Image 1 (cartoon, rainbow, N blue to C red):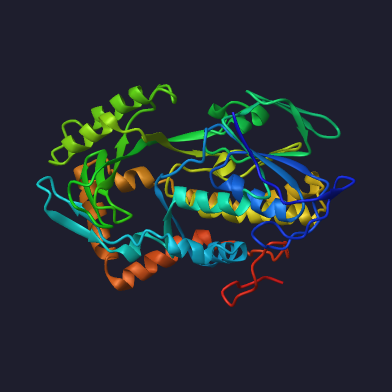
Image 2 (image 1 turned 90 degrees about the vertical axis):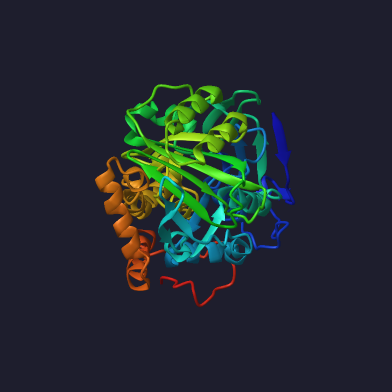
Length: 439
């Protein structure tokens, strides 16, 4: 277990008396009576820690990985609600400094000739970054005021009238006021508090995989994508690295039984789906997969759960309403973290009132964002030649500036379907004309 504790606080009789964390943002004592445990150090976890620590709460993040996870797929933000929260966090400009600047993505024929071009403005939202880059940015903004415990995980949760007793796989037992499950689609916290994942996970008939490979095509912030019925192979370069590219695979399948910890087994599954494809670059993808140490593999699925809280436990981000891809999940997680922190401050830390208000504010919004991801599998890997041709015709139409603008507005609709409150949280950046604040 690796424990990283960074604080700049002082306390008198258990009450925090500091006013400025290391990054200079103002804090208050509004939640100084709360000890909060957050499970998950990817994006939703550090985002809620960002806000709660600035309201005076003592926040601990526990993460089962041994260190901060780097890399991952590119994620984008779109619409005024995402922009407002990112601006209030003070990271809107930071994200633009690390954005992918992704160019064209080209659908190709089996002989690698161009078939359809997808211009960059169609696919990347207002700003697109790697998941690992925003995770690192949030960690840097919280590491001096939040306790991070890497290489450990929650083992049990036992709630009482005054708190929630937590045991860990490795660390000593501790008691907290609240627990936030921000540990992703396959949330361990959700399983402990709400029951087995099978009750909540809805499988959509597809799987997705991603891994690094050599940039043998010399791509520079561009991508090439080849589709056969029910499976798609893609090679992309999002960061301009002349040596490294990313490989992605989407394929249709019945639900598979496999060990999520057995990477060798997952590699065999993905290689088996790639074999026999007519695209000449597939063999290089298979060779790279054999030695890859960064494989991501999962079903395309969603979480559907009736409630986001139970007692002192609340679910945030993909743990509560996740979708594997296409559901604007990262933006939704950041918005939800802001709302959860705001409702806790508004309720003076009363979790019953705050959690109920949080669910009332965010459930419809999150489900609307989640809904647009339901067609991600057939979108990337249509099941028949006829549907591949139909998809490609739609791509050609959307490549026109007029229809692309319509498509952009359509994709922003779900992301912007929330009248975002101004909670006046400590740590907010100065107001800006882009904020569209609500009274």
